[in-house]
Amino acid sequence: MRDKIIFNWSGGKDSAYCLHQLQQQQADILGLLTSVNEHYQRVSMHGVRISLLEQQCKQIGLPLIKMMVPEMPDMQVYEQAMTSVLSDLKSQGATTAAFGDIFLEDLRRYREEKLAQLNLKAIFPIWKIPTIELARSFIAKGFKSIITCIDNTVLDQSFAGRLFDESFLQDLPANIDPCGENGEFHSFVFDGPVFKDAPVAFTKGELVLRSYANPTDPAQQKGFWYCDLLPA
Image (cartoon, rainbow, N blue to C red; front, side, top):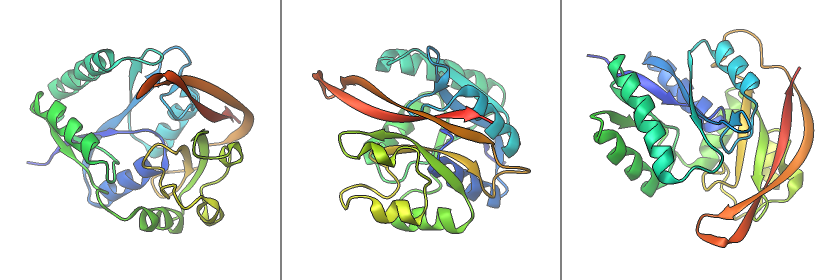
């Protein structure tokens, strides 16, 4: 019996590459599950407007499943929201959740443990692919994405709003993961082999700096530069 997969979709490059891998395997994907900031009506962390997320999923041709969460939810609130959504999807036939994680062992273990409590399986189709190899393969396959968010403690604001291309990779400091797997940057995919018709059209808006309490040290602030993307 084939797995019926809920794909955990961020709208970024690793998600898109991972989805492409599953599509190449003729996987049965029920929909794209995205965490959305209810206050700002944007993709959590990535800062992308819901309208662009909806266009993206429409061009991919898979249903969008939005999990609405408050601004800066604590783990209990987040887990309650996720449990509710996944339980509903399981009742509709879902057996498996897919993730575009690459090498964060703690995160993988957390996902597997939480899903096991719901009797769901977790799969990680691009797990342990070297990130520089993954980044260059993403570009070579014709995917196009733009950097929508950067952690300003590790990258200069000039990286926000850039295309994810070979020039971007060459300009990254040596201590930054080429795929931003440690949260250094996030992206929005607007074209590539997972899209059925046309690219997602947008224009670049302003750069905005937002600061949040550092989860590892609440007395400290952690800042992120966001490049706003406007529907064209």
